[in-house]
Image (cartoon, rainbow, N blue to C red):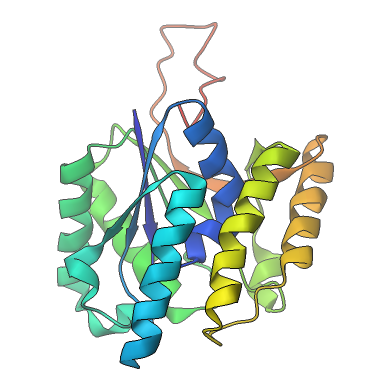
Length: 225
């Protein structure tokens, strides 16, 4: 099976669900992160950011794909109809069982546009599970407004892998945002406490098709397969 993650910028997916991606890799599930922008205009910074994303993918074990070869700097550069078409193409190419992207209530305009375009594209994805992860910027009001419905339990080893992947971005010294690794670890622990486990990452369920013909299974389907 394949889990397709639609990410507005490099590091978005790693911050939100890097531990889950590591867990999926551990059990042999293919994870594809389709990154829609490079999010750097300076050529040297673009090269460093792309290199950091590639290295982070090596650490976490997912496949990194640059939409349109990394031609875009921001999602706002892409027309709405074109953005939906690009998502359609990624879904057709990878045929995922589960699609994960940003939450439409996020504080970042690029994240919101990608989330809404993915909802539009979901018209052709009725048989696939569709999840959203919450805001990565925990100092914004939107972070507190995100109400998780699903908790993905991760291990300490998987959190450590996530932090090693994010450390690659820190070392690249890009200046886009300060990645506070200690805070990211604390958030995983806080989410775990909410779910009655040690560590967790969180999601909202947008769509999942269930089969009521199997009374032993229909309410217990794992969204990650």
